[in-house]
Length: 211
Image (cartoon, rainbow, N blue to C red):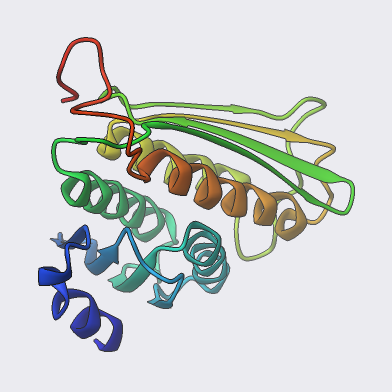
């Protein structure tokens, strides 16, 4: 795995990295992550739509990300889609360690034509996900559903231990146009939240710990 070799060959450079895998009767997933990356990605999940969304997430978040997944796609994409969210959340949690010095909170709004997606993230140790789409949900794509995106985001938030709130205004009848700005905004917001604040001495919590 090309990016993984570069990621884990540079651990001594102080980069925050993680290598995670998940093997079940339904899915086999291998994932490599560098938080302090360049936005490079190699993603093969078997779900073309999700591949593209994760490429956008990686690029706009400046995360180096490699994902290889095999799943029971002959049944449907549910298990693979959800399990990738689980492993990605676990990878970020592992890479961030005790969260020492991070900004912890980030937010971003990204437009795409008439659609605007706004994402707020708080890496507080408590997993929570909220999706708000005033006026109702976007139409499902023939290859992907809005419900799959919700399952992905919720799994990611729970495993990372973060509050992830997403609001999508003026959803398009094109699911691609509705979700693309959401994944971009998530990348940007998470990049903000994971950056080291030189003014912050210690863990960013009045409790002194983030689980």
